Length: 508
Image (cartoon, rainbow, N blue to C red; front, side, top):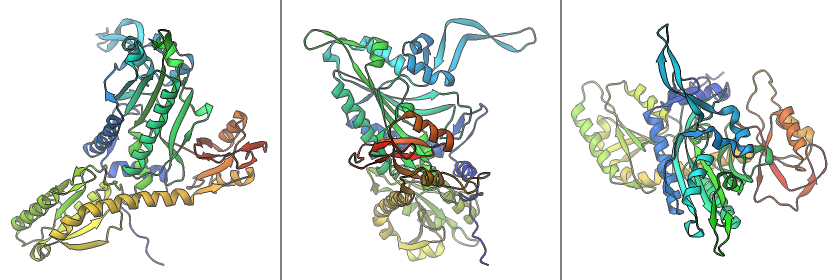
């Protein structure tokens, strides 16, 4: 029997996918748990990744006419109570501030004092507080549209947490817009979903499906929620971004009214849309392998690490000087509108150990330079989308000229790999028996990766949706925009007539 190959991450994806995920986060030095339950410390490598995501998205928002602002962290409880469905949807997740100071008790311990006249909610989302602001800003049709985004943190008191995917506090952006007409608001809702799709696919190398959520999966208080859905390597779905058409619900609750072109007082139409640090979790579960993280070059914190190989007796100063010369040469190049970023790792650490650290962190390219490479005017290059032992020698000038193209090859390869996996685990299913088998693990005690995306007919009865949720923990992930309504058949659950197929999956 052949000896099983040793991997940097233990357990492997196949052995224990949830634990593998946690180990990748740690090994890649992305984040760690904080002293506050359910919260995380995003470490410099992980935060630099978030900054690149933020920069890319922010540029796309501004290209579509949006500007940034900032709104309060605290929301008066009465604001949430104005929109009944919204408060019901978030009530169980709210963190509530009831006092404004601490005093020392008889035993020397601090106790809350100075009770607030009205409790304040630590924002779970900002529709209500922003709506109150917009009610002051908007007086006339001439004030419209309002196209504002904010980068912020939010708090949702989660009971079961997992770093990046579901935490009590997380970072995100939330866009909030106001429009004169229903048509304009709908166009905005769809436009921003298209921005998310483009960013997910072109920057994060994550292929996504687009569509509308069912009523049960809709954002609380929204008329319609649109989404992008991605498949992870355990074949579960991840909701990677949402865009909400709020109709006039929040505008009525907040009093956002304007004088129309005809001189009438009208209620505005609003939207909201957002993505969060959950995107990093999605990147891990889409691209990482049993050796650690794999960073798509367009958002990687750095593109290349140069590893000087300083063997005993070699001219260390000369090798380090050569490494810096190569780095300077590469830094003159650009990739995807960004200067190619290079780290020269001069740490006094064993070369093999140092190399594996960078494999686990997922940097796209590792460049080894030893005395022989220096003598030959060469570099030894490893790509993170290939096996750790696959390396290619280049003349240093040739590598510098080729580096942008190599990074784009890695970016494309990661996207195509993820798309192949999604397509291989997407099935057209027409009967409940096959549907149940598709979503049932063979090992119920320790479920293996199973299921995927089931494209099936659904009669749109909430009872059928509830049944599969209770029986199989499966939900309708989206009703695709491009589904064929001429494709008629029977609901996969109850057998009633149905038009078009929807996407069913287990999800995060």
